[in-house]
View 1: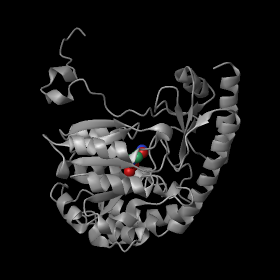
View 2: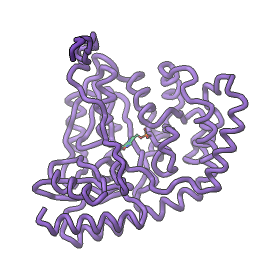
View 3: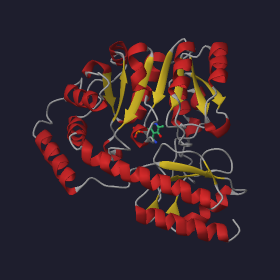
Length: 366
Ligand code: PMP
């Protein structure tokens, strides 16, 4: 410009280790069919929306006061929901599981420390790791996007990471881990082991949760979220289950009153509707299984999915397929290994639109 007063990020005295980085950037485009961020396609029912509005109204009258710093009512509700003998002291909540992960890195990572993950996996794990000045040690997943326990134990023994991330079911592959892998990793890891179970409720029959391992593993943390199964992505509520000593450690880094009174009331109210919400999850699981079958029938490679999304391929030019779908009004995600694409499971109508669009795009020789 003529004024010459415009400055860019490069002109600012930001931390050297942040220079050249890009922010997390799933596109937020206005499209008829958005199947790109693993959201729950079902908005709160009228009954639930009414209860949420009532809870907010009741909270509004007291907003001159700070909220319960320890979010006790919400944590008690989350503990009851999780079961496994958990109580308030072993559960912690924050603004989305992303903030839970940040607090874990703040307490257990930091400069001079390292976190390890098995890729492809959730892109925020290395980002949150880096933001806290923690080193990142990426390992590769094996065939079928699983984790070979011997290879994992060897990497952990060699690198002695302070934190190990295991994502199960994994994003973007949908793959869940057998408990044996988690136990082997927990036995070998010198520090904390975080099992990111954001998609836990979408697991297929017989796929276990790591919650059952908590009593025997004081350095194990299981993270969850209300963004997916509870259809509450807009409210920003994530949580974890762990030994009460882990929760004590996180209180050292959390900001006072980090979880607003509105958020706490909304989340606790949604928990009362767990049965209704898990009914919709069951529908989504069935929709997911028929999507996997349909894609395989059409000759695509499809990763087994225990989540509310499906990774499929393999395309010589996945960008062309992604763009072709967008031309049909269907937004999915270009993520994962080269040649693969990820689609979130939506409503039956949205999935019909996806199938029609993909048929059109791939018939064109894409
Ligand atoms: N973990 C995984 C594996 C995810 O895919 C996501 C969201 N895409 C999150 C954590 C974070 O979700 P939230 O902050 O909404 O709880």
